[in-house]
Image (cartoon, rainbow, N blue to C red):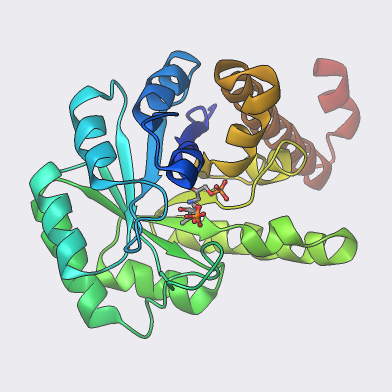
Length: 268
Ligand SMILES: CC(=O)[C@@H](O)[C@H](O)COP(=O)(O)O
Ligand SMILES: NCC(=O)COP(=O)(O)O
């Protein structure tokens, strides 16, 4: 059976980064979100950072009213953010670690080291009707802890894979593959994201069981040259092509294991 089509969540933080650079009203991330939806985004991701460096509370409030798809609100585990999520009830909340001085999200959430607080946040958010995901590194200990605290979804941090090259990238890809497999066995929905771009996304989309990719920086950067709708459509085509390639590779492997190589290739 064909698994559900892989989903693309478009992160619009970097539209807001440009706006905040001059303190202008433009470009408006809310307008960008609606265009991304028209181009086929399955959801819109925003990271309301504690330092408010890009997305503002006004953006999140407006998005909650106007989105046609669903919002994935990325946030640190603070009482202020929990209250906002409980009030606005976005479809998805992704708990992420935050350091004020970081350039971007450097690592995953330490779920194993913070089970009690994270478990309590998961319960509060679930009670508000939000599906909670935990943004974690592809580490077995963190995946097991995510399942234990009752999070239904994890998002694997793909930053280390995105920054690596050659053999190191293959190693990081293998870590993501093992993590996705372990998480699926534990019944978790597996998303992935961070640092994915037009040249590295297909191999991640090809991983069995990946439900959704959240991608921002590369799409917003490309939109400067081709427009936002085209940038979103191109990324969507690549994620679907990656998923299809992964499915074919899995079929080939299965045929090979069962000695049906010739039969399989003549049927495709
Ligand atoms: C959690 C994550 O990966 C994204 O939210 C990403 O961090 C967005 O960009 P910034 O790190 O620049 O906020
Ligand atoms: N959670 C990852 C995300 O939303 C997008 O990250 P990036 O593509 O902007 O690095």
